Length: 546
Image (cartoon, rainbow, N blue to C red; front, side, top):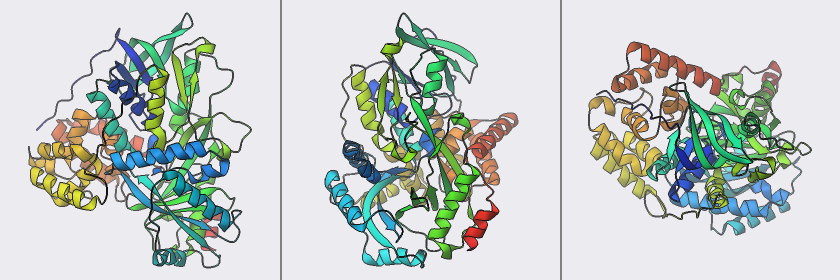
């Protein structure tokens, strides 16, 4: 079987009601909302959907416990409301997760203050949550540094292990609602004349051809690139809109004593740090460092890597973690509101809509800030800002609320039978693709090469790749393996896995040897630029040994 990927039609000269620039989770959510409101919508992304800030987050869906300390009750309330919506609508991707707040004797936060904050947090959520039992808390405490006196507080939030998959689902829903989408298409400038934004000029990177489209509204949702787009379009703001803050993470293997719950604690400088089980590994993050460099080339600094490794080794000295333990590190630039006088931790995580009318670009709005949890509510706000009525849809779920395990088990059996695949593969498909799992099962039935695993270390199959090319706008091998079917983020991935995956995918897509080689080379370059294998300084190794 060879799958022919259709060439993209030119959009030159077309008119859209809304053009959304930027295909992260916020941009995709906004395009989906505008398309559902019945308006012609174009979504343009310079690289691939979800390949920027979205894929470099801590991947938790939370109300923001620390926002309470800054008095941002409205943001906490909005975040908790959106957390509940995601848990209800996307239970295959967003799961409840127990968190344990750790304080030692040196913490600046009192136990009384923490208990009061957690009580208020639960009250605002309006949801009865479960807490970890004493035995589990004791197990966690035994794994921690025995030389410190610990206080442990249990609460509940949620996790989206793969926001890339959430973006892919929202993207297909936007397309189904009539949106036109283009990834690998760079906006060169917004066309501004006579005091109004009138369209955009962009270059399709797949063809190298420039195209111009007209629009009633332009929504600049480029995150850390927002100011650059304005500068390129001669839209002059009084001051920068974005104050880029780099956040870095380490990925470690699961180690002896590693928690099954997420830990929320303080580093040596008092900054909050998460230690989160993720994708059969452990994620440690994040840092907050001012960064005004090219967001597309951001990377964890040596100081950040040292800082995070030192934090986790001091928490779990018995695990004997060291530099060689780090599987990889990654970084992203959060597009927080410009606030040069504030400590990065104190800058609001609330989103803002910046209307450019006063700068001679009416009907252009830049979206500043935001986070994974509140992307859908931001999208509804943007729809209202351009005169649309947001849609309220029925929950999209694997099954009704409550205990999802029996429903997941039944869906797994049904997909396994429909696709003639193993239950392990079927479960992975259901967990990553939700209601589209049965479509993938039918594709798998076409041939044995489609039922083959993408590489020997994963149960995910080539049929998932085919669906991503057909329905989720995947273009490159990186689009597939890092975002649509993100097996390359797994604990066992290696260069040999990349080669094997390219061979199996290429055979189905009809790649010749040259196409195979160029796809594989481009993928390895992208993977290396995203997932850094750092070296760690001798000072940290000494600290770990101590």
